[in-house]
Length: 180
Image 1 (tube, rainbow, N blue to C red):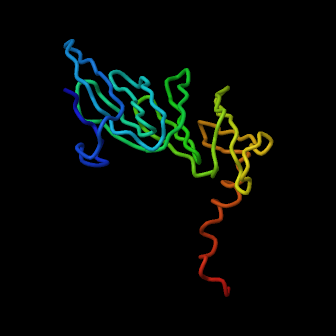
Image 2: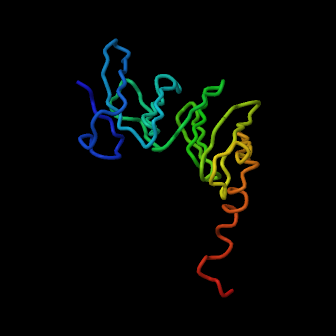
Image 3: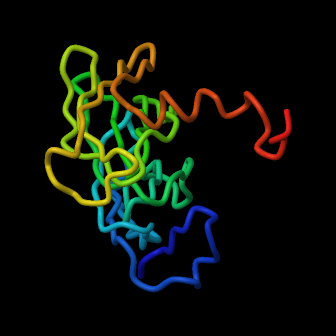
């Protein structure tokens, strides 16, 4: 019989079949988890530092130790893609931002820089590259998807219009002080 794993998002009885995973323990026994899904169709399992695994069930992330039926931690609900780097780090993306997961499971998120999608993520020499749909473009023509880069060491993001022009000035003046 499977063991429901929801990661604290809801009671295990609040969902039916999710992403089913068989875990193998060090003593050669196994157990089957029924992982509560997130909001996307993206499912995968990636290795972290031994013995932990990153299980993505419908965009929801669970860091699991196969020896325990409870997640080490859970995060997210709408991840759409993953890229594992040569050093073991994992790059995840939603429609609006990127998360870097270290080999020990720690997460680092960018601010929201896209509203309508991120795609074609690749890695080269410490830089994550991809394209995103800029705000204001409601059609999904290829020429409306500008490029962005993210330096994974210093988290410098370039080419992202929404991030650079909107998020950096959010605290400059409250929206309700229109008379000043």
